[in-house]
Length: 190
Image 1 (cartoon, rainbow, N blue to C red):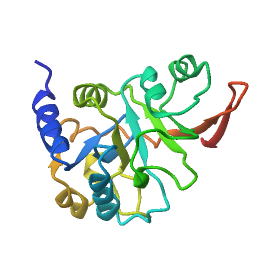
Image 2 (cartoon, rainbow, N blue to C red; image 1 turned 90 degrees about the horizontal axis):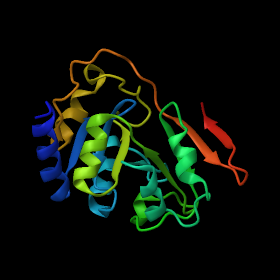
Image 3 (cartoon, helix red, strand yellow; image 1 turned 45 degrees about the vertical axis):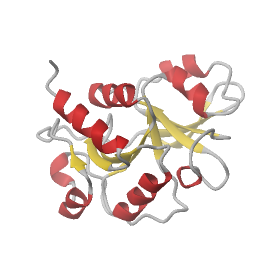
């Protein structure tokens, strides 16, 4: 049995009931919820004290999953995503199936296919996309490790994942890109 099995089970129970979690992602510590649950997404904005105009990132487990949530992705989208060698969030036009509060005002959505074992396992078992936004009050420093997560954030969520709380390796937020018609990347955040 994998050491994060209890965390996965607890997260799924919370997420299925419309709750939110504090969890380690492939980049930084994040706040998460069912990305298809409008009320749960609203709670993430409230915990983070984030303006609604600033959209959130969504995590998926596999590159092929993008096709389900984006209208007209690049024809080579799976190969492009699988070629990324660093955590990369892609901004896509024309999001499909997400509640209005999870999508940018222009209809776009930021999606990252996650390689981190915990996140990947959680998303696969939950069978839905997860919101992923840094676990900080809007405007405050991004928590690269658990010890950097504000006590108010920790107490404001429904479940805090135990897995990786003792990690000391500092990661940075993901690269943010758009995919151009020719398949090249427009870098929005290095």
